[in-house]
Image (cartoon, rainbow, N blue to C red; front, top):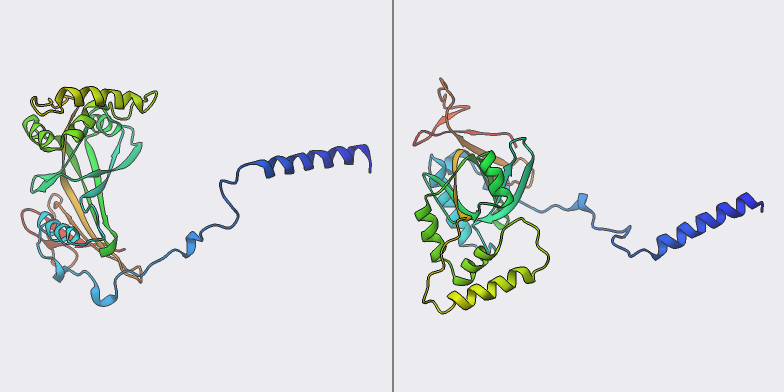
Length: 261
């Protein structure tokens, strides 16, 4: 073996040894993601326009949401993914908890200084996505966002357990901290001051509610064939007239249509 060949062999061998000594964070054999699929609804369980309980989205949401609340496998039917974006369009998404809904919109509470709060301040639009897997149903909401009145945020804040009030008070959400102890030390201080219930913990000014005012609401139900059902409620465009075929007249100023899956 020539000197050059010996050197090449040594280099290859060292590389092999180094690779072999690395911790195994993944293996060649893994879950076959391509084969991950489950049965959804059958054709005789299709979600058609005739199945709508209401011809406007808030009433229809109420029907589906309350059904989801009765399913034991759905631990938090009010869990929803909230998507926001910067003024330049860079998106971010995270789960939050829905804390109210009505004809005026969908409510959630959070830290105004968090990433989502900063993005909503510069681009007050958002999307919500509920997914109730046991029912094979999803609801998507899009619209503009406003802060709820301060008295409404005060009322909800003081309806929460004290430990939750304290948790919201100690955290400057989304900002770096040196350790968990930074939060727990402040937690102990506030617990010592307010834990006996003699004084009311003030709602921090950086925490409160938002309402997503819907402009578009889609109801999706999965089909095993992937010919899913999608019924979409929206506000009519200027001069648009429902024809009863492609576009249907709803209630309370809404129209609805079926979308291709």
